[in-house]
Amino acid sequence: QKEVEQNSGPLSVPEGAIASLNCTYSDRGSQSFFWYRQYSGKSPELIMFIYSNGDKEDGRFTAQLNKASQYVSLLIRDSQPSDSATYLCAVNRESSASKIIFGSGTRLSIRP
Amino acid sequence: DAMVIQNPRYQVTQFGKPVTLSCSQTLNHNVMYWYQQKSSQAPKLLFHYYDKDFNNEADTPDNFQSRRPNTSFCFLDIRSPGLGDAAMYLCATSRAGGGGYGYTFGSGTRLTVV
Figure 1 (cartoon, rainbow over the protein chains, first blue to last red):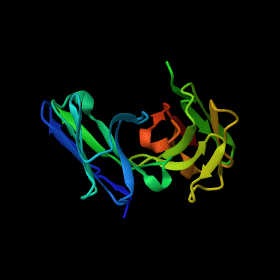
Figure 2: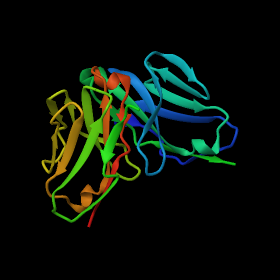
Figure 3: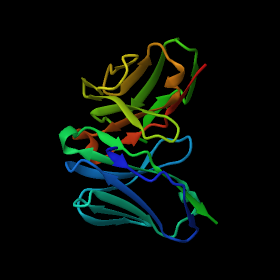
Figure 4: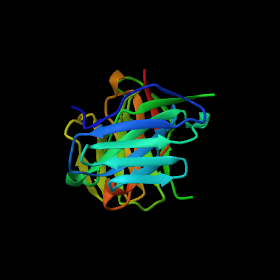
């Protein structure tokens, strides 16, 4: 079992709709959770982080965390073509606080 | 602007010829990381430095080495590159306390082995 699992996609969403990206993790000791956006050929860019159960909103982005279910998600409202990218979920474990473990990403495509 | 800079952006090396990738940061972050990312795969942590303390991942091949001569610079040395080492190499930094704050990534170096 991978430590961080994501559906590879592609996930195709019409422009203006809500894109929903999901991630599960295996280590219950995970403390911090991140969403990175990665355009093709570029490095990852941090867009959201969440530490506590519940929702965290930042502009068009909402991160949701459910530690009991070991589940984290990212919602993108009013999706734009510029949101087309790969979204990497990442977690930080208490047992190795310096390190972040990444999922392999979900490729999101926003169709006009 | 404070940032993480990787050089070069693209590197072509010959099979078996040693190559060095560099990373510098102006963020004054304590922790520096090297990740390897192959196409459609998760970034894979190779090693990281917490200040001067070197932390190697158990599955990082001996072919990969790293140096951190000072806070600002970190180097990745590949002693004998193989075709399987072709990948994007990502340098990242974080504050002390490490991963809990997330990383700042450099722009990456795309390595091609011919």
